[in-house]
Length: 472
Image 1 (cartoon, one colour):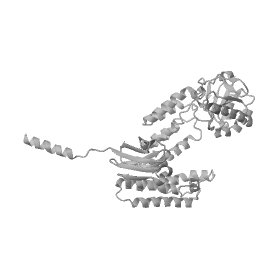
Image 2 (cartoon, rainbow, N blue to C red):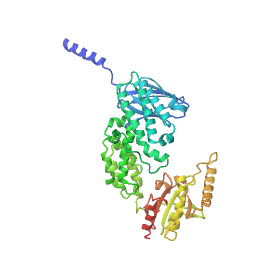
Image 3 (spheres, one colour):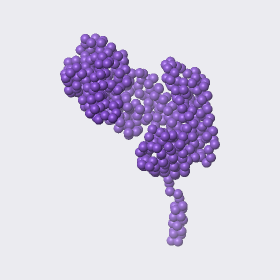
Image 4 (cartoon, helix red, strand yellow):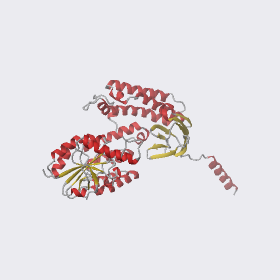
């Protein structure tokens, strides 16, 4: 009995000496000169929100799944963050000079003050993106190398930094360099207005050309690696799809399955879910099912399902949602039902919408071409008074309508010009899921949908569609 008691006592002593397992980091801080009420810390499949008090202070215990790189976002400002389980990290920052004022103290300060200095160095190096990416190849590569070397000097001079952090960050500096090189072709061509710009054969290092994008740890640890991997996958995908996404098939999406990193595959599907599940695509149902079956993120599955459920009644052949008694610029009111027996091409626009105004000359040309055909061109204004300051809502509404009438006269707009009863909150807009403009819709003589997202007037595909429907 005595031996059992001694054994039990020994076990108890060992148990008491064991440190409790810590699965969190404590993050506190204060932000000056800011009205932002929420900070976020993001990681791979991870997001924590921290409330910011009236005096700018915040505090939270962050349950982290691993020691790794995260992102701290306050308002529109972002900075990388490295958290280790057991850290007690304090952040001080002035919102009016975010990068310059960012300072850390407490456990974890060494690594994060380095990241703040690195971020500041990069922002100064790319202070003017137009000038930065407009440089000729040799000068650009020299500048990129200078940024990398400065950051490397900051890293090698760290004392008492986490060894895993040092190891990861050495490789991250390489990925940062690769990411800037990877962005050069597209941005140089855009900023210098050289549409056919091509880089030299030896512009990319062999290691970048041959990257396999199979490193899940790097994808979590480096935004630059993540950006390159994502860009590589999407480039391959759209090389297969081409410019026309209105008829995407499941076969064209198979390349997604080549992604070796599960998080990359999820991110690609999440991105595609925002525009590929569209009622203008006759393959919408199969595309929806494929994307949903190939992601492991419940949030993406939910978004896909919500989009599909909203759009399934907007496919070709379904009865069109109705607009009723919209004010007609020529006098009186008009409903969609009044146009039954004719095709109706609807242009949803507003006087404040630049891309909408840009389509007007092309719309006039299309109207002229089909002037004697069985089709009406209907423009519906969603003007809501935005842009007018200091007035009451009633005054804004009057000014918005007056602006609509003036533009019809100034631009000599043809067709049927209507004014929506409640701008973007009109039932017609809600039923068609109109959340951005311009938006174009084609309805057949029986009041059924031909396309809930028809080509723009400037797109030659519109003329092809109308000629096919009108059997010209």
